[in-house]
Image (tube, rainbow, N blue to C red; front, side, top):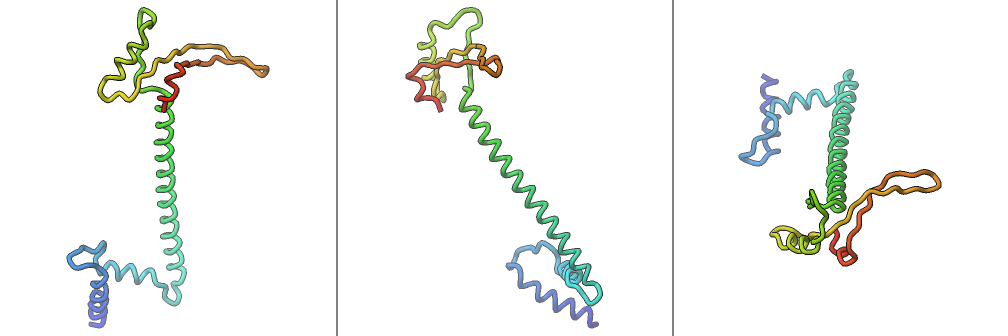
Length: 151
């Protein structure tokens, strides 16, 4: 009878922890069992130390995962904004002849709904050399009046 009375007393004490109508994350009996094993008795002091370090280790692992995922997500967003800021979303290139009416074409593309800017761009390959070596490079050029509209 003493055990049943103790359980009833502890259940009554735990019922005040939660708002009325809300569901507790665990049943009251589970809280009692967890509390019994988390508190150390005379000889079993090592059990609560092991339990404490286990909970601490899991908490640190989860916190590290959350922090790393947050940093990587922010890095991904920043990287994509930098890449898209340098490269346009759409490149219009001729297939069989050179562009000669690029100013007229960029004006027509700028008037399309949803287009923020259309800039004529010249792109070509070149070779860059220095006293330490040489390498192929990609050279891009735009008109002076279009520099302010980049970004």
